[in-house]
Length: 587
Image 1: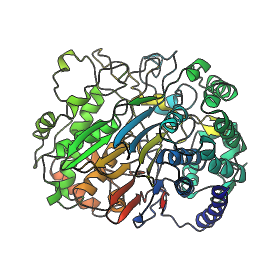
Image 2 (image 1 turned 180 degrees about the horizontal axis):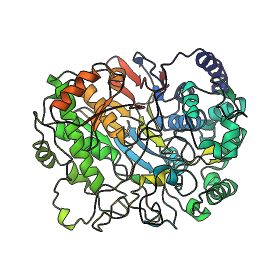
Image 3 (image 1 turned 90 degrees about the horizontal axis):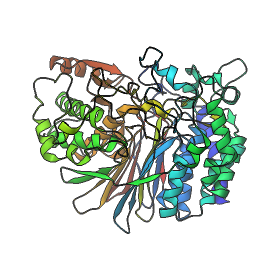
Image 4 (image 1 turned 180 degrees about the vertical axis):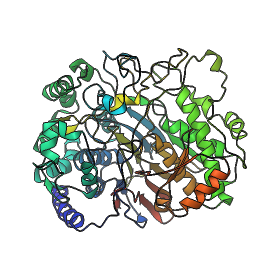
């Protein structure tokens, strides 16, 4: 019970910390960033020698580090972290959501990628998010309730990964989260901030009682929350495996909650029992002297990050100052071109033929790079022409993909590593709470419009059993000798791609350490306005400079949740995004 004692000790420390936390004033929530900012906590890079876990909450990082200390693998630690995150950071991920996991096996020198993305119910139809007039629903009219809930995939995927790469017993990985749920944990400043601006969660009585006071205000920072229903669910999964979640009483409760919501969904117990996690081939590309790899479709993250890097390969970013006018201009233009392809070509590969190799072909990306001028910004970019385009009948989608996600980076004592991004989509997902955990609204990552104005089908349209396209981008970097040198990823909805690409450029071109790379001001373009991060240094001058080049510029909150570990001669160097409350912990 060493892990349990450490959890109790850390609860006390965290309660003291949150009780005295002095965060910057909260920024107003925008529609495009519903998981609002909660201020910055500036940090120094953490250096360890044997192992490290970086996650979005100190209790989760500590649970992962304790598993690693006990001899567990990176996958073991990822499972323990996810179970704790679902408790202490419930707005972002959990049992009711999905995840993508990239795993590096040091002994075999092999990269494996696992798809735990949610699927649409068997009854889902392409017009799911259209109103009576055939027009797309407003976002929150689609999100709140059962219609947006996909079949959760995280639990089944983590079980698959553990069977292949776990070292410790499955049951042991559940102990930290069970103890926290039963004994209680302090409500964090970030969770409080999000509850304070949340408009829909109180519609669910169980969620209202758990998170809010009788007068409707959130429970204060530092309040000890106890979640016995969640602990009971974890005990059942620990004992019986993922079947305890996908079959039996837990599954029945999930289905009943979805079907009996004010806006009901059509999820069935058959949808749950037939869900399958999938091992898919990784996608890899070359950037400078490095090999960069990530998750393939149905995530667009890996491919689009590789496209951005492949376009930037044609420019000497190393000679430019980090976040300078010239660098941001080039980065934004590369993003504009890459996002144009993302919106047209990428969807669930079990339903659509995704041209993965063609999209990251160096010659193709060289042609795309030639469209960039150093003196003038592009207007809206069109998808590039690929050899198969004549046979590809499709159109650009209109999925909003708002951010409520969490990323974790892990390196174990054996040299194995995990980069995993996990999500329930919007902040607090569908707002449906079942047995202590929230259900996702991932189906709103599909295009609301199944066809374009001229009748072409959208690749990312709703279809039965289909996985919605994602932007999650868990990545790893290898040097020219095949040695792992970086584990990185981020939270942040459709901006994840830009956040991860920025961190990679910062580390590989500008030689920033992992903490500096994730802390660097965010910037990018999603084939629209160029977005700069509010409250960052020189943002006003940068805005004027970009506008002089023809950019339409928006200065907006960009609450990334980027976490990274670099493997150096000094040891493992961990970086946790200062925009959230994560921490790098190890030995």
